[in-house]
Amino acid sequence: MSRLRLLQRDEAPLPARSIYGADGSASPLKRSLANAPDLLETLLPFLGQIYDEGAVDLATKELVVVRVSQLNACRYCLAAHRPLALEFGVDEQQLAAVCDEIPLDSLADRERTIIEWSDRYVLDPGAITDELVARVLDYLRDDQMVELAILIGATQMLNHFCTAFDVPPTA
Amino acid sequence: MSTQTTLETAVEEGRCGDRLWLYATYHCNLACGYCLTESMPAIANRRTLSAETMIRVVREAQELGFGAIGITGGELFMLPGAAETLAEIASILPTVALTNATLFTDRLLARLEPLAELDIALQISLDSDEPDRNDAFRGPENFAKVERAIPALLERGITVRIATTVEDQTEDELARLCVLHRSWGISDDDHIVRGVVRRGRAELAGMGVTPGVTDILPELTITADGAFLHPFGPTVRHGVTDLDLLVSRQVAPLERAAERFLRLVSDQPVGTDVARNIR
Image (cartoon, rainbow over all chains, first blue to last red; front, side):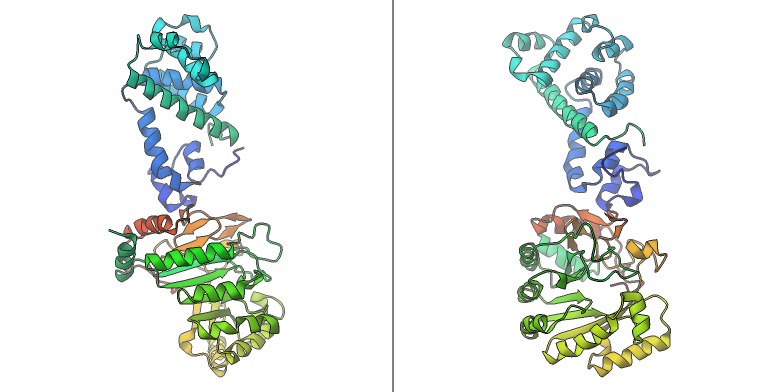
């Protein structure tokens, strides 16, 4: 059971009601965030930009989001992003690899390199070497690395939030 | 456009009031059946605003162009130093302070004497001219205590208003109540009669009317839980604050909450307020 109130639309603060659909629906995460409507003014546009397609394609982004959520064992984010990853072009084998169901070696060089860098970014950023960055730069530009780095940070934030408050995948 | 100008325009257009409300505390020595905030002696979460916070908010309110202050609760006089805090607040802006007037010992009355020189009214709840009827709403011996307090305050030159919350009182009963307050020298203009709002404990008891968002004049209301659209917003059910009329969690600086409040009221149609005289 969530440790935060999951507000229904008619319980939610007036400034937060725009995050609900016309039928009053919203994800459990949004319903929990509605407790702090001031933050939504900047947080949701921020997350929208981070998670939307930018300099990096959505398949790569979702692959990284699922991997980071797997490392952080976030039940909520895995349930939310595994279907999204498939929708945006990640294949079943890639998904199984980043979820540790099959070896990461099964990934193509590009994806394996990006995931290697993502893993270090999450688990031990001090261990990122110039050599690893050089390999990532074979596949991504500087600005794309920045975009993925911010995406990883945002995903970690949400992983911790959902896990700490036990936000349920469905409610 | 500055917040001050936006507020001035909104008040002129009738979109909101220029009074800012403070919920001093949710702690109370009474446990009225229609209480919006489930206030009572044993309340678990008192949600008290410190004197420093209240005074800061009032100073900021004055700078932003608010014209008056309302203080409610809970019972303000459960707080140590309430008399002195009230005097300081009233020296900044005209103030109305809601109280049940049951804690006015001679010592407290003496500490309240400086209020006679300030633009402040104590708004005292009284629901019937019949002690038993009044006390059924508001608790044992409430009538007797109020009946002692009002003349004592008036003798000291402190302005008193009466507020009556109507649930099932008869017209005759309300008329007799008016005779009573006039006998104290309190005019009809200083007698507020309003219905029970079906929120908080009143909702659980099935009392009162359910107001729509636009039925009540928006007046920025500051509590320990954040800023609300009007003083009927920060209600409590089963110990949990209702958030449906929350405007902002952030109340410092007050301007941030005021901006969010004004953004909301600017979206509301003009002239829809006070359909039920709920103020």
